[in-house]
Amino acid sequence: MGGKYSKMDPMDVEVPEIHALLDRDHYLKPYEKEIRRRYAVFKDFLENIDENGGGLDKFTLGYKYFGINVQPDNTIICREWAPGAKQLYLTGEFNGWNRDSHPYKKLEYGKWELILPPKGDGTPAINHLSEIKVVVETYEGSKEDRLSPYATYVVEPPKEEGTIYKQKLWNPPQTERHIFRNPKPRRPESLRIYECHVGIATSEYRVGTYDEFTEKILPRIVKQGYNCIQLMAIMEHAYYASFGYQVTSFYAASSRYGTPEQLKRLIDKAHELGLVVLLDMVHSHASKNVMDGLNRFDGTDACFFHSGPRGEHALWDSRLFNYSEFEVLRFLLSNCRWYLEEYQFDGFRFDGVTSMLYHSRGIGQGNCFQELW
Image 1 (spheres, rainbow, N blue to C red):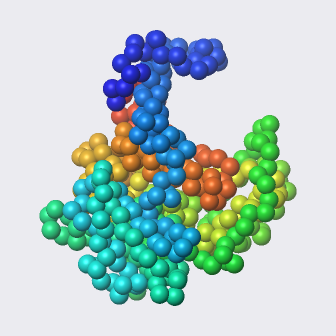
Image 2: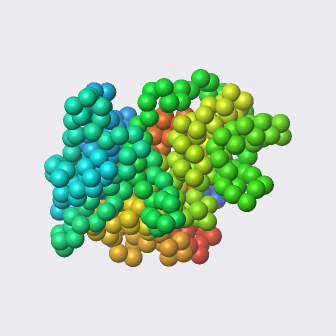
């Protein structure tokens, strides 16, 4: 990105504990210069976040700024990042699906904002579980329905209504919100990880639920001597057979298994049983779905992704993030924090890391260091 660290000779860039790393794995020694160069790029990005994003702590709270957020006084603030859009509107059950009555105001840097004051009785303008959509007007003159990239609850429609997932506002009464009661367990000296999928954790020919997993599976995992679970297929994915690796809504826990509060209960119970809980995090690519995914959110083939062939994975048939884009970094880093804070996950297993690190996406290469950035 051309910052002060990137302009340095890579061998002059100080990398913490690099000598210990190279001593542990001598096969990395020929790539020391490249490791230092990449660390320099990282330092430049971190400095950019400090200068223009308010620091890493503020930067990773993107989910409190973007998306549809109900304030303490029941005002609803809606914000999106859609740099390629001509105009945004909000539509849904709250306004009788009027596609023009609630336009967003254009801010700087591709951001859009809409503020909805409370109703006359003081309640939010959009009810809990009310369906909503973002309407994107393109410069070609079309109006396209989209789900907010920051949607926190999306559901599969009834079969007679098709296959496009629906976004619903998740804002339950305080009495229905799960309150975490158990502290996170201490980090074990060594992890014994049980990888699991809530939906297939049943012997019956149906999709399992968060509650069933909490009540029936967690005790069995503990009894077998594991101290950690890694939950697959939590981030919402319209294509169930993808095992959660074609994510469509990154901030929404899959509604196939139950509600967000039921997932929180599962994690709380796991902590009570002494289990560390890891999330199988998919930030290496995204589903190509348009109407219920991130693809073409602002009407262009870019936005969150690289445009053209660089933005498509040849083997996975999916979209590839533009990690050099400021708002993409905010989206993904805030996504990590969302699951740590909202759901109390303890950490992550990142899927498809070679696709994140290399231009080749790791395709057909046993040693991906051969192709450098």
